[in-house]
Length: 291
Image (cartoon, helix red, strand yellow):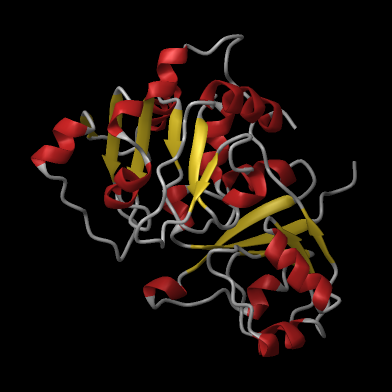
């Protein structure tokens, strides 16, 4: 039996907690002997050195790249998976990248177009999780909204686009990303939108989190930009209709009024979203999620 090629999987140390790249590891494990390495530069720690990388046949850089100068010394075959929410579109960076022996997997159409512009070997892919809804979804569920507050999308934004009469319950989980503070909800807002505060750490209680999503027919995507967007992709697979800011990667999966709803979170006075066709939107969302 021939051995699997070795692969160094270089990931941001932050993802060791969020496990956001685990789905991708599971896809490549049957084909490679995968060894995980954690880039600690976000904590002012070290990168993975070239000598370590060169002990492997392949290297995947997940989100973060080593400095361009390192690539002159790297002998392993290089694959990069950039994330739209953190990638630079600087001309000089991409021009320098175009001279390197690198392949790029793009979960964002914007990044793929950038690769094409500079003639870089790349592919564009979308990721869908396995649908887990039943034959029928309780229509009452579509009157329940869920927001996991991570910082970029706040309740103060959402109350401008959702009328309180359109929902029965508003479930609110406050778990801000690093560099974001918790927001304060007034008693009036809590009463008007029938807000239920959720007190779980879904990193430790993922099943409990998923049950909340399953109860919520409206899932509000928590960020303005996504590298991939696992949270809203997962919600679609669980039978929720997604409401999201009109940017990548959400607007690559969602067509406003067809299989979800898009809005401009940067507008001071956005229009209220018309949810009267939500039953039809839910049917279309299920079709798209089954791709």
